[in-house]
Image (cartoon, rainbow, N blue to C red; front, top):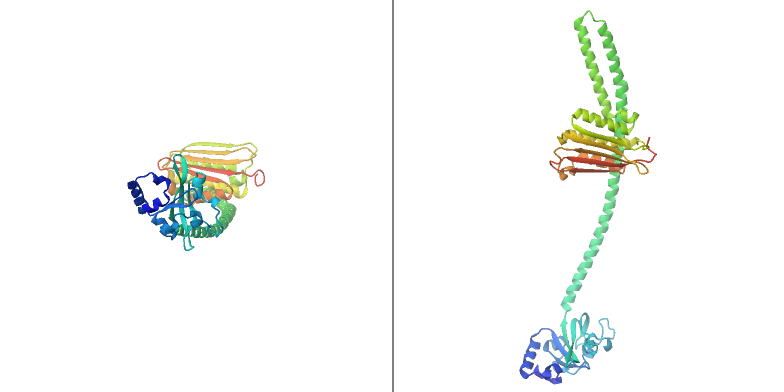
Length: 402
Protein backbone atom coordinates (compact mmCIF):
# COMPACT_ATOMS: atom_id res chain seq x y z
CA UNK A 1 0.00 0.00 0.00
CA UNK A 2 2.91 2.38 0.59
CA UNK A 3 3.74 2.04 -3.06
CA UNK A 4 0.20 2.96 -3.94
CA UNK A 5 0.34 6.01 -1.71
CA UNK A 6 3.62 7.10 -3.22
CA UNK A 7 2.36 6.60 -6.76
CA UNK A 8 0.86 10.08 -6.94
CA UNK A 9 2.75 11.42 -3.98
CA UNK A 10 -0.35 13.06 -2.43
CA UNK A 11 0.34 16.17 -0.45
CA UNK A 12 -0.91 14.85 2.92
CA UNK A 13 1.67 12.06 2.83
CA UNK A 14 4.58 13.70 1.02
CA UNK A 15 6.07 15.18 4.14
CA UNK A 16 5.40 12.11 6.28
CA UNK A 17 8.25 9.86 7.32
CA UNK A 18 8.37 6.33 5.91
CA UNK A 19 7.35 4.95 9.32
CA UNK A 20 4.22 7.14 9.36
CA UNK A 21 3.42 6.21 5.77
CA UNK A 22 3.62 2.55 6.73
CA UNK A 23 1.31 3.12 9.67
CA UNK A 24 -1.15 5.00 7.49
CA UNK A 25 -1.02 2.19 4.97
CA UNK A 26 -1.80 -0.36 7.64
CA UNK A 27 -4.68 1.79 8.90
CA UNK A 28 -6.18 2.11 5.43
CA UNK A 29 -5.82 -1.61 4.77
CA UNK A 30 -7.36 -2.60 8.08
CA UNK A 31 -10.62 -0.66 7.62
CA UNK A 32 -13.60 -2.34 6.03
CA UNK A 33 -14.72 0.88 4.35
CA UNK A 34 -13.38 1.85 0.98
CA UNK A 35 -11.09 4.89 1.05
CA UNK A 36 -9.47 6.72 -1.83
CA UNK A 37 -7.91 10.11 -2.43
CA UNK A 38 -8.31 12.42 -5.41
CA UNK A 39 -6.37 15.40 -6.62
CA UNK A 40 -7.70 18.67 -7.99
CA UNK A 41 -8.41 17.00 -11.32
CA UNK A 42 -10.56 14.37 -9.64
CA UNK A 43 -8.07 11.58 -10.36
CA UNK A 44 -7.29 8.91 -7.81
CA UNK A 45 -4.03 9.41 -5.90
CA UNK A 46 -4.46 6.37 -3.66
CA UNK A 47 -7.00 3.68 -2.99
CA UNK A 48 -7.21 0.98 -0.33
CA UNK A 49 -7.89 -2.64 -1.10
CA UNK A 50 -11.45 -2.52 0.32
CA UNK A 51 -12.42 0.24 -2.11
CA UNK A 52 -10.84 -1.55 -5.07
CA UNK A 53 -12.64 -4.81 -4.25
CA UNK A 54 -15.92 -2.98 -3.70
CA UNK A 55 -15.60 -1.37 -7.14
CA UNK A 56 -14.36 -4.56 -8.86
CA UNK A 57 -11.03 -3.04 -9.97
CA UNK A 58 -7.43 -3.80 -9.33
CA UNK A 59 -5.69 -1.17 -7.24
CA UNK A 60 -3.24 -0.20 -9.96
CA UNK A 61 -6.10 0.15 -12.45
CA UNK A 62 -7.72 2.83 -10.31
CA UNK A 63 -4.73 5.07 -9.64
CA UNK A 64 -4.75 8.10 -11.93
CA UNK A 65 -8.32 7.53 -13.16
CA UNK A 66 -10.99 10.19 -12.97
CA UNK A 67 -13.14 8.76 -10.19
CA UNK A 68 -16.37 10.42 -11.28
CA UNK A 69 -16.03 9.01 -14.78
CA UNK A 70 -15.05 5.66 -13.31
CA UNK A 71 -17.65 5.06 -10.57
CA UNK A 72 -20.14 7.96 -10.45
CA UNK A 73 -21.04 8.71 -14.04
CA UNK A 74 -24.73 7.70 -14.04
CA UNK A 75 -27.72 8.11 -11.75
CA UNK A 76 -29.57 5.05 -10.46
CA UNK A 77 -32.33 5.63 -13.00
CA UNK A 78 -29.87 5.64 -15.93
CA UNK A 79 -29.59 9.40 -16.45
CA UNK A 80 -26.16 10.94 -16.98
CA UNK A 81 -24.61 12.39 -13.84
CA UNK A 82 -22.74 15.60 -14.79
CA UNK A 83 -19.34 15.93 -13.19
CA UNK A 84 -20.16 19.54 -12.27
CA UNK A 85 -22.92 18.25 -9.97
CA UNK A 86 -20.75 15.64 -8.25
CA UNK A 87 -20.75 16.17 -4.45
CA UNK A 88 -17.43 14.26 -4.23
CA UNK A 89 -15.66 16.84 -6.39
CA UNK A 90 -17.38 19.77 -4.72
CA UNK A 91 -15.39 18.92 -1.60
CA UNK A 92 -12.24 20.34 -3.18
CA UNK A 93 -13.76 22.65 -5.82
CA UNK A 94 -16.05 24.54 -3.47
CA UNK A 95 -14.82 23.43 -0.07
CA UNK A 96 -18.15 21.69 0.62
CA UNK A 97 -17.83 18.44 2.60
CA UNK A 98 -20.62 15.96 1.97
CA UNK A 99 -22.14 12.78 3.26
CA UNK A 100 -24.54 11.10 0.80
CA UNK A 101 -26.51 7.86 1.26
CA UNK A 102 -29.13 7.96 -1.50
CA UNK A 103 -27.04 7.41 -4.65
CA UNK A 104 -25.32 4.52 -6.42
CA UNK A 105 -21.74 3.83 -7.46
CA UNK A 106 -20.77 1.68 -10.42
CA UNK A 107 -18.56 -1.41 -10.54
CA UNK A 108 -16.15 -2.44 -13.27
CA UNK A 109 -18.66 -4.99 -14.61
CA UNK A 110 -21.28 -2.27 -15.16
CA UNK A 111 -23.42 -3.11 -12.16
CA UNK A 112 -24.42 -0.53 -9.59
CA UNK A 113 -24.73 -0.77 -5.83
CA UNK A 114 -26.35 1.42 -3.24
CA UNK A 115 -23.60 3.40 -1.59
CA UNK A 116 -22.98 5.76 1.26
CA UNK A 117 -20.05 8.06 0.63
CA UNK A 118 -18.43 11.07 2.22
CA UNK A 119 -15.92 13.49 0.76
CA UNK A 120 -13.78 15.94 2.69
CA UNK A 121 -11.22 18.41 1.34
CA UNK A 122 -7.49 17.88 2.01
CA UNK A 123 -5.84 21.16 2.96
CA UNK A 124 -2.09 21.83 2.98
CA UNK A 125 -0.70 25.16 4.12
CA UNK A 126 -4.18 26.65 3.88
CA UNK A 127 -4.64 25.46 0.30
CA UNK A 128 -7.02 22.71 -0.85
CA UNK A 129 -4.99 20.09 -2.69
CA UNK A 130 -7.58 17.35 -3.10
CA UNK A 131 -10.10 15.28 -1.19
CA UNK A 132 -10.37 12.05 0.76
CA UNK A 133 -13.42 9.92 -0.04
CA UNK A 134 -14.89 7.10 2.03
CA UNK A 135 -17.36 4.69 0.43
CA UNK A 136 -19.51 1.92 1.87
CA UNK A 137 -21.74 -0.65 0.18
CA UNK A 138 -25.16 -0.27 1.85
CA UNK A 139 -27.08 -2.65 -0.42
CA UNK A 140 -28.10 -4.88 2.50
CA UNK A 141 -29.13 -1.87 4.55
CA UNK A 142 -31.19 -0.48 1.69
CA UNK A 143 -32.87 -3.84 1.20
CA UNK A 144 -33.64 -3.97 4.88
CA UNK A 145 -34.99 -0.41 4.74
CA UNK A 146 -37.09 -1.24 1.68
CA UNK A 147 -38.36 -4.37 3.38
CA UNK A 148 -39.15 -2.35 6.48
CA UNK A 149 -40.79 0.33 4.36
CA UNK A 150 -42.80 -2.32 2.53
CA UNK A 151 -43.85 -3.86 5.81
CA UNK A 152 -44.75 -0.40 7.10
CA UNK A 153 -46.84 0.33 4.01
CA UNK A 154 -48.53 -3.05 4.30
CA UNK A 155 -49.19 -2.32 7.96
CA UNK A 156 -50.58 1.09 7.03
CA UNK A 157 -52.83 -0.50 4.40
CA UNK A 158 -53.98 -3.08 6.91
CA UNK A 159 -54.51 -0.36 9.47
CA UNK A 160 -56.46 1.75 6.98
CA UNK A 161 -58.60 -1.25 6.07
CA UNK A 162 -59.11 -2.00 9.76
CA UNK A 163 -60.03 1.62 10.47
CA UNK A 164 -62.53 1.55 7.61
CA UNK A 165 -64.08 -1.64 8.98
CA UNK A 166 -64.11 -0.18 12.48
CA UNK A 167 -65.69 3.03 11.16
CA UNK A 168 -68.33 1.07 9.29
CA UNK A 169 -68.96 -1.09 12.32
CA UNK A 170 -69.11 1.99 14.52
CA UNK A 171 -71.74 3.52 12.23
CA UNK A 172 -73.74 0.30 12.42
CA UNK A 173 -73.42 0.16 16.19
CA UNK A 174 -74.35 3.84 16.49
CA UNK A 175 -77.44 3.25 14.39
CA UNK A 176 -78.31 0.18 16.46
CA UNK A 177 -77.77 2.17 19.66
CA UNK A 178 -79.97 4.99 18.36
CA UNK A 179 -82.65 2.46 17.49
CA UNK A 180 -82.39 0.89 20.94
CA UNK A 181 -82.68 4.31 22.55
CA UNK A 182 -85.67 5.14 20.41
CA UNK A 183 -87.20 1.80 21.33
CA UNK A 184 -86.47 2.39 25.03
CA UNK A 185 -88.03 5.85 24.80
CA UNK A 186 -91.07 4.41 23.01
CA UNK A 187 -91.42 1.68 25.64
CA UNK A 188 -91.13 4.28 28.38
CA UNK A 189 -93.86 6.33 26.72
CA UNK A 190 -96.05 3.26 26.39
CA UNK A 191 -95.40 2.34 30.01
CA UNK A 192 -96.28 5.83 31.23
CA UNK A 193 -99.44 5.78 29.14
CA UNK A 194 -100.36 2.41 30.63
CA UNK A 195 -99.64 3.70 34.13
CA UNK A 196 -101.89 6.67 33.48
CA UNK A 197 -104.66 4.42 32.19
CA UNK A 198 -104.37 2.04 35.16
CA UNK A 199 -104.30 4.93 37.62
CA UNK A 200 -107.41 6.40 36.04
CA UNK A 201 -109.25 3.09 36.10
CA UNK A 202 -108.27 2.44 39.73
CA UNK A 203 -109.44 5.91 40.66
CA UNK A 204 -112.68 5.68 38.73
CA UNK A 205 -113.60 2.05 39.41
CA UNK A 206 -112.00 0.89 42.64
CA UNK A 207 -112.13 4.32 44.24
CA UNK A 208 -115.83 4.62 43.51
CA UNK A 209 -116.50 1.13 44.86
CA UNK A 210 -114.64 1.87 48.09
CA UNK A 211 -116.51 5.12 48.58
CA UNK A 212 -119.83 3.34 48.00
CA UNK A 213 -118.79 0.56 50.38
CA UNK A 214 -117.81 3.14 52.99
CA UNK A 215 -121.24 4.76 52.71
CA UNK A 216 -123.02 1.39 52.97
CA UNK A 217 -121.03 0.38 56.05
CA UNK A 218 -121.81 3.74 57.63
CA UNK A 219 -125.50 3.33 56.84
CA UNK A 220 -125.45 -0.17 58.34
CA UNK A 221 -123.61 0.95 61.46
CA UNK A 222 -126.23 3.59 62.23
CA UNK A 223 -128.91 0.90 62.29
CA UNK A 224 -127.03 -1.38 64.65
CA UNK A 225 -126.80 0.93 67.63
CA UNK A 226 -128.75 -1.63 69.68
CA UNK A 227 -126.24 -4.31 68.74
CA UNK A 228 -122.93 -3.01 70.16
CA UNK A 229 -120.84 -5.90 68.88
CA UNK A 230 -122.11 -5.44 65.31
CA UNK A 231 -121.82 -1.66 65.54
CA UNK A 232 -118.18 -2.07 66.62
CA UNK A 233 -117.60 -4.42 63.72
CA UNK A 234 -118.96 -1.86 61.28
CA UNK A 235 -116.66 0.79 62.68
CA UNK A 236 -113.71 -1.58 62.20
CA UNK A 237 -114.79 -2.23 58.64
CA UNK A 238 -115.02 1.51 58.09
CA UNK A 239 -111.44 1.99 59.29
CA UNK A 240 -110.27 -0.80 56.98
CA UNK A 241 -112.06 0.86 54.07
CA UNK A 242 -110.37 4.18 54.96
CA UNK A 243 -106.99 2.42 54.95
CA UNK A 244 -107.81 0.84 51.58
CA UNK A 245 -108.76 4.27 50.21
CA UNK A 246 -105.43 5.67 51.43
CA UNK A 247 -103.52 2.76 49.86
CA UNK A 248 -105.38 3.17 46.60
CA UNK A 249 -104.51 6.87 46.61
CA UNK A 250 -100.84 6.06 47.22
CA UNK A 251 -100.83 3.51 44.41
CA UNK A 252 -102.48 5.99 42.06
CA UNK A 253 -99.91 8.63 42.99
CA UNK A 254 -97.05 6.20 42.41
CA UNK A 255 -98.47 5.27 39.03
CA UNK A 256 -99.14 8.81 37.91
CA UNK A 257 -99.06 11.78 40.30
CA UNK A 258 -102.15 13.81 39.61
CA UNK A 259 -100.31 16.99 40.59
CA UNK A 260 -98.09 16.51 37.53
CA UNK A 261 -101.09 16.67 35.23
CA UNK A 262 -103.06 19.33 37.09
CA UNK A 263 -100.39 21.74 38.38
CA UNK A 264 -97.39 21.06 36.19
CA UNK A 265 -93.79 19.94 36.63
CA UNK A 266 -92.57 22.69 38.96
CA UNK A 267 -95.27 21.99 41.54
CA UNK A 268 -94.79 18.23 41.15
CA UNK A 269 -91.04 18.47 41.82
CA UNK A 270 -91.52 20.61 44.91
CA UNK A 271 -94.29 18.31 46.17
CA UNK A 272 -92.11 15.21 45.62
CA UNK A 273 -89.21 16.81 47.50
CA UNK A 274 -91.43 17.69 50.46
CA UNK A 275 -92.96 14.21 50.50
CA UNK A 276 -89.46 12.72 50.53
CA UNK A 277 -88.30 14.90 53.43
CA UNK A 278 -91.39 14.06 55.49
CA UNK A 279 -91.14 10.33 54.77
CA UNK A 280 -87.41 9.97 55.50
CA UNK A 281 -87.23 12.51 58.37
CA UNK A 282 -83.77 13.58 57.15
CA UNK A 283 -82.31 17.00 57.88
CA UNK A 284 -82.94 18.76 54.59
CA UNK A 285 -82.25 22.02 52.79
CA UNK A 286 -84.78 22.54 50.00
CA UNK A 287 -84.36 25.40 47.56
CA UNK A 288 -86.68 25.92 44.60
CA UNK A 289 -86.43 28.84 42.19
CA UNK A 290 -88.22 29.15 38.89
CA UNK A 291 -87.49 32.21 36.77
CA UNK A 292 -90.52 34.25 35.82
CA UNK A 293 -91.91 33.47 32.41
CA UNK A 294 -90.53 29.94 32.11
CA UNK A 295 -93.42 27.60 31.45
CA UNK A 296 -93.28 24.05 32.72
CA UNK A 297 -92.82 21.46 29.96
CA UNK A 298 -95.40 18.76 29.45
CA UNK A 299 -95.52 15.40 27.73
CA UNK A 300 -92.54 13.05 27.72
CA UNK A 301 -90.02 15.62 28.94
CA UNK A 302 -92.10 16.40 32.00
CA UNK A 303 -92.50 12.79 33.09
CA UNK A 304 -88.83 12.02 32.30
CA UNK A 305 -87.61 14.81 34.59
CA UNK A 306 -90.03 13.76 37.30
CA UNK A 307 -88.94 10.10 37.14
CA UNK A 308 -85.25 11.09 37.22
CA UNK A 309 -85.91 13.21 40.31
CA UNK A 310 -87.78 10.34 41.94
CA UNK A 311 -84.82 8.02 41.28
CA UNK A 312 -82.39 10.55 42.75
CA UNK A 313 -84.38 10.72 45.97
CA UNK A 314 -85.01 6.98 46.03
CA UNK A 315 -81.27 6.29 45.86
CA UNK A 316 -80.69 8.57 48.85
CA UNK A 317 -83.39 6.79 50.85
CA UNK A 318 -82.29 3.25 49.92
CA UNK A 319 -78.49 3.42 49.74
CA UNK A 320 -76.98 6.61 51.16
CA UNK A 321 -77.48 6.13 54.92
CA UNK A 322 -77.36 9.91 55.07
CA UNK A 323 -78.29 12.31 57.86
CA UNK A 324 -78.57 15.41 55.72
CA UNK A 325 -79.65 16.09 52.15
CA UNK A 326 -79.59 19.30 50.13
CA UNK A 327 -82.03 19.64 47.22
CA UNK A 328 -81.84 22.49 44.73
CA UNK A 329 -84.29 22.95 41.86
CA UNK A 330 -83.45 25.97 39.71
CA UNK A 331 -84.90 27.10 36.39
CA UNK A 332 -82.86 29.72 34.50
CA UNK A 333 -84.26 32.62 32.50
CA UNK A 334 -84.83 32.62 28.75
CA UNK A 335 -83.67 32.92 25.99
CA UNK A 336 -82.04 29.56 26.75
CA UNK A 337 -84.13 28.20 29.62
CA UNK A 338 -82.48 25.39 31.56
CA UNK A 339 -83.58 23.24 34.45
CA UNK A 340 -80.99 22.31 37.06
CA UNK A 341 -81.64 19.71 39.76
CA UNK A 342 -78.94 19.10 42.35
CA UNK A 343 -79.29 16.46 45.10
CA UNK A 344 -76.41 16.15 47.56
CA UNK A 345 -76.18 13.89 50.63
CA UNK A 346 -73.61 13.24 53.34
CA UNK A 347 -73.97 9.45 53.18
CA UNK A 348 -71.56 6.60 52.65
CA UNK A 349 -70.94 7.39 48.97
CA UNK A 350 -69.94 4.90 46.30
CA UNK A 351 -66.92 4.03 44.15
CA UNK A 352 -66.86 5.27 40.56
CA UNK A 353 -66.72 1.74 39.15
CA UNK A 354 -69.84 0.80 41.10
CA UNK A 355 -71.75 3.72 39.58
CA UNK A 356 -70.52 2.81 36.08
CA UNK A 357 -71.25 -0.92 36.44
CA UNK A 358 -73.41 -2.40 33.66
CA UNK A 359 -75.96 -3.57 36.23
CA UNK A 360 -76.42 -0.12 37.77
CA UNK A 361 -79.80 0.06 36.09
CA UNK A 362 -81.03 3.03 38.09
CA UNK A 363 -78.07 5.20 37.09
CA UNK A 364 -78.21 3.91 33.52
CA UNK A 365 -81.92 4.65 33.31
CA UNK A 366 -81.48 8.21 34.58
CA UNK A 367 -78.71 8.90 32.09
CA UNK A 368 -80.64 7.43 29.16
CA UNK A 369 -83.77 9.40 30.05
CA UNK A 370 -81.73 12.62 30.30
CA UNK A 371 -79.80 12.00 27.07
CA UNK A 372 -82.98 11.31 25.10
CA UNK A 373 -84.10 14.90 25.71
CA UNK A 374 -80.63 16.45 25.33
CA UNK A 375 -79.89 16.61 29.06
CA UNK A 376 -76.79 15.70 31.04
CA UNK A 377 -76.63 13.74 34.27
CA UNK A 378 -73.43 13.75 36.35
CA UNK A 379 -72.65 11.87 39.56
CA UNK A 380 -69.82 12.76 41.93
CA UNK A 381 -69.25 10.27 44.70
CA UNK A 382 -66.53 8.55 46.70
CA UNK A 383 -66.63 6.09 49.59
CA UNK A 384 -67.26 8.00 52.80
CA UNK A 385 -67.65 11.34 51.01
CA UNK A 386 -71.35 11.34 50.14
CA UNK A 387 -72.92 11.64 46.72
CA UNK A 388 -73.93 14.51 44.48
CA UNK A 389 -76.22 13.97 41.50
CA UNK A 390 -76.82 16.83 39.06
CA UNK A 391 -79.21 17.08 36.14
CA UNK A 392 -78.99 19.81 33.51
CA UNK A 393 -81.97 19.72 31.13
CA UNK A 394 -82.67 22.18 28.31
CA UNK A 395 -86.26 23.39 28.23
CA UNK A 396 -88.44 24.17 25.23
CA UNK A 397 -88.93 27.82 24.40
CA UNK A 398 -92.67 27.59 24.04
CA UNK A 399 -93.71 24.61 21.99
CA UNK A 400 -94.22 21.62 24.23
CA UNK A 401 -94.50 23.78 27.35
CA UNK A 402 -97.47 24.98 29.24
